[in-house]
Picture (cartoon, rainbow, N blue to C red):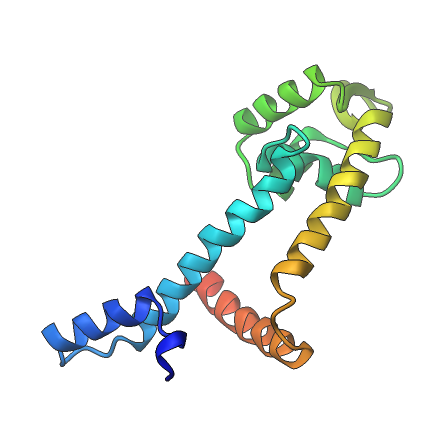
Length: 168
């Protein structure tokens, strides 16, 4: 490996090799790089949301409603399950989004005791702008990879994710 390709993980791996040559540090190196990628990519992803006054969780709610299709509304429980949130966590997000005029709670036509959450016109316009920028940002972050590299990375990520989910 060329000197200019070395990173902080290489240094850590070499330190462990020196101190504990009996341990194989390859897995630690890969997991370390994945963690660093997650942190750096997360900052860049969240910067798009922040530029529009949103937090990641609020974006997630708006995006889930948008991709649900017309009429862009869901039951709060379904929304919470989709986003893997507690009901209380969902209520807080919905309160903030409703105060901002991005969603509204409406009576469920099939059950007068139930409520549905719907995007407002302003919420629909905002999420369309933000999701367009978000997709472009993620594409930009991965643009250093060839199409073949992207296919390999996606295949490997799927394999790892499926195995980790099986053991979770």
